[in-house]
Amino acid sequence: MSASDQSSESSAVAAGWRPETRLVHAGTLRSQFGETSEAMFLTQGFAYGSAEECEERFVGPGGGFLYSRFSNPTVAMFEQRMAAFEGAEAARATASGMAAVTAALVGPVRAGDHVVASKALFGSCRWVIEDYLPRFGVASTLVDSLDLDQWRAAVRPNTKLLFLESPTNPTLEVIDIAAVAEIAHQAGAVLVVDNVFATALWQSPLALGADCVVYSATKHIDGQGRCMGGILLASEQFIQDHVHMLLRQTGPCLSPFNAWVMLKGLETLSLRIERQTATAAAVADALAGHPKIARLVYPGRADHPQAEVVKKQMRGGSTLVAFDIAGGKAASFRFMNALKLATITNNLGDSKTLVTHPAITTHQRLTAAQREELGIGDGLIRLSAGLEHQDDVIADLLGALKAV
Ligand SMILES: *Cc1c(COP(=O)(O)O)cnc(C)c1O
Image (cartoon, rainbow, N blue to C red; front, side, top):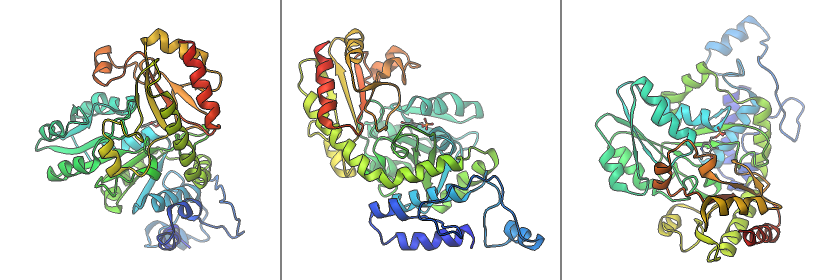
């Protein structure tokens, strides 16, 4: 049976399942051995029984696997499972989150086109838009993500793409995705949303009007800090028009091993995200109002600046909390150095609780003025809640605050 036959069968069945069930079963392709756990197909190529079968595989309507740069059974299972979970027609897995973001940004544009993006972006995404696209004649405008008038004013007749992430990194502002999608569509442009911080469990950008959603699977999808990966989800039309050939011919393909890790990660995704979100919410409640915390932002709290938008477009808060330690860089360093459980790193979405100092890591490339504009102060900490007992995490944070 060809890959396309098999996946269309399983997606029809999966459509009747609830999200948690899709995360465990959707997209499974069983080999002739009938294994219960998904097989890892570590192969570059595929053998054909005859010259006729070979020709049919390449030019016939049935499709099928040809070469693992194009597609691979384990990678296809990951793509199908994510598509079923997200409610997307099609998905393409990539070697990293940045490979997915780059394909989604480069694929729809040509020299002479224009892109509008939020200023508050993951550092590498901002580099692709500000520094890389202009080399090929694609201009860009960066806007204050919360100001819809700025999005409207930035659109030009040659604008082809709008890009945002919400909640934003690292300050967890929440952008009205449906409103930006409407601005994009009125301009005849597409909207691409980086949904890493919300996860597919808590937010569905395609249902809110986005044309393409991208993930760093490195984060919550793996969820245990092991493999790099990414995935891009959209309509079949968007994939065919904008990224199918780009991904096939330029080769940022996901390794079958990493795809297998991601696939198994999806089986526990809902449990992990629910637990980590509950911990993040408890951390936010424990730290809010603490005398050594100057400001705290958590999308699940009533005091979040965009609480109304959160209520409208998210089903849950976030596994991340952002807070400013009063006293700036020196105080925040004392805080980080006094932590005994939480790990100092620049990553997120791990089973271990992680703390990041954005000004010296993920956003160090920006100027001090650019950081200030984004609300990234020298005392800002971004916490990614892990799977430890929440009381241990909170005790660690409160203990470290005593050292400040
Ligand atoms: C990590 C991350 C990326 C990039 O993903 P990689 O897997 O590191 O390439 C893009 N966007 C956001 C919001 C991220 O957190």
